[in-house]
Image (tube, rainbow, N blue to C red):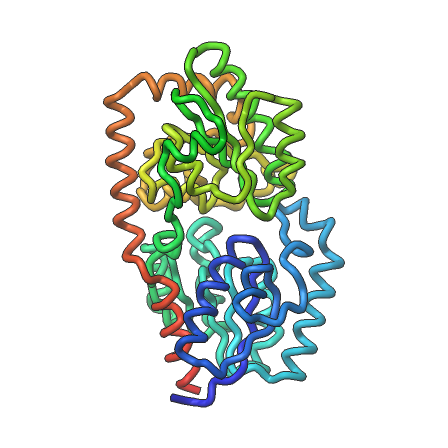
Length: 380
């Protein structure tokens, strides 16, 4: 083995912080003397990373929302650049967060011997022509999307598919009945509401979901609702929104997998949560809203027909999507009511979700990713 001693790690959002922390723990097993510094959250800090800038200062959603964080983003990039010059890391592992990481990789290309992208930019959504620029700044890309490496064939970039880390994470800790008893949820149809892990995302999406719950409640007896409050979100925000838009929902903090497992059907914000629901085999509808300007800009750039990762992995729409102006309480409620009353359709959706689960690969993604980081770095 070579002299891998110091690693720079950047994760700019909650999901990246989680996946990076798991990767770092696996790296520490392979390289006990390896030290880490960079951008992250509490999970990375707990894994032993010296956090120079917190993810809470940088996490944004959409084009227009970036404007409010421009100053913080510039300061973080300058700080990290100075520290890269001063500390001389042997490897940089950049996790997701492409708006920041692609720019930063260009700045440190001449400073760091090896730069590795873990959970790479979604070039398949934004135009695969962008893939030809990635090899200019990265020595390897570790992918968690099964078809992603095909895009980089012929570019010279080393690309490795390791499976998706959600396969190791989605582990409910209680039974369905224990969850319902803990939160005093009646033994009836339970609709789980998963509105995302970022404040602005929750503020836009959760009211629509709660209004949909209200429509369902008026039209169907014997239905309850539970809302997941992510660990990165102040639960008071979620509770305040519930009080305003649908006061009958239970708010559950920090145990999304238990909530999903206990639910019969889900309303899920577009993102990794759709894959988590797929791993659990839970029928769902996908809801997504962003600012009107962000939506107008995205429509001209996005090259895929679906936004939900479960549908993208499946290669077709296996679960309904309600995006932007189509995300109305009436439409969402009608779809869910129709779905829960159609056993044949529910069964078909569950079979399709099994296919998504199979395409995500095998468990052990973080361990395999750590091995690749060490192998690539030791080739210095």
